[in-house]
Length: 229
Image (cartoon, rainbow, N blue to C red; front, side, top):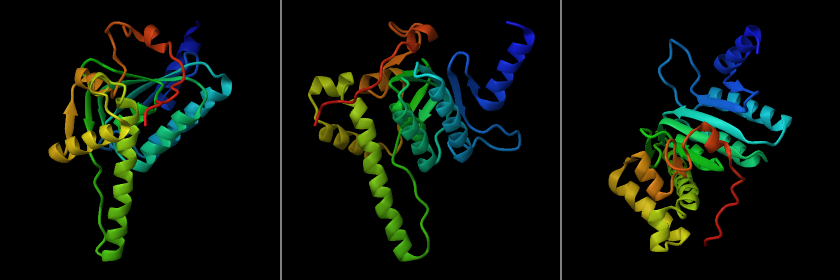
């Protein structure tokens, strides 16, 4: 490969967050030297959706997503989540540093969910800003409750096959209740990569058996969902 070709690939990776030759996307915050880490927001979401749909339009082979995010806005995170779920190409998400809040939810969209050895996982109920109008505040609280239930169902549908819940024979409803109680007791529930694997929030840890390297984790089939109640 000539230097000019390599330069073009490097430009695409840094400027657009994509390497279409290897079908890899880099999912991270919009980079700006004058901004603090914004996390998941509209710029990240729109750029990612364009890249994902572009690779999907070329062919339906596997896509590897490198995710490095602190979490962020629910709506933009769910735009990313829904797009990953909607495409036909099998997806792998490799999470760096942390899978926190809505970035932990995005991880659940992948057909294969992989964490770096020192990546931390955080699950909690989201926060809301309330208007001084009591009716608007009541509406916001009701909507936030629906969001919390949606989040719990997303996590529970994947976690139910994890060792912790599988060994106890938990139903989907019991998993949701367990997660809800755990969050309400701790507010922010932090887990190591090993703990996230045990509870079923990821499928493997890079470097461990079956997940030894990038080439190994690329092999994935579409997630069909669980058949549990």
